[in-house]
Image 1 (cartoon, rainbow, N blue to C red):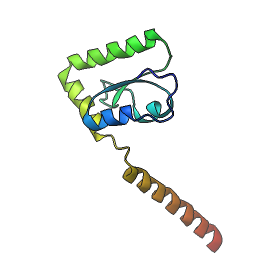
Image 2 (tube, rainbow, N blue to C red):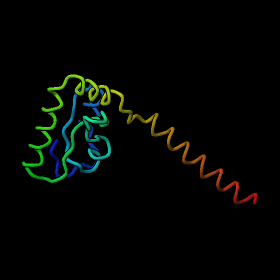
Image 3 (cartoon, rainbow, N blue to C red):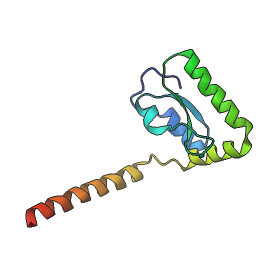
Image 4 (cartoon, one colour):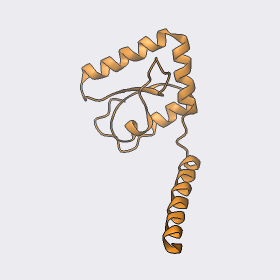
Length: 112
């Protein structure tokens, strides 16, 4: 997904759900949801690139192909993708935690 601009993006979210690996340009919602895979630490759920040009895109494709050659790394990457949670349940839980923390802070200020 070598998008120049992407405010949200559903393609990469669908890919994560099915364990298919995305190669995305670091922009908008693509940057927010796909993290570059590091074969050393096994962290990340796809492949990213920054510059909007064919050389950067090709470099990301080559990194993906290199990881694909190592089945242990590839399986770790697929599991990371499948384990990515961008659901509304997760978002709602985070918002509830944030609002709860704000309320506790206000309560401390008002009762001090």
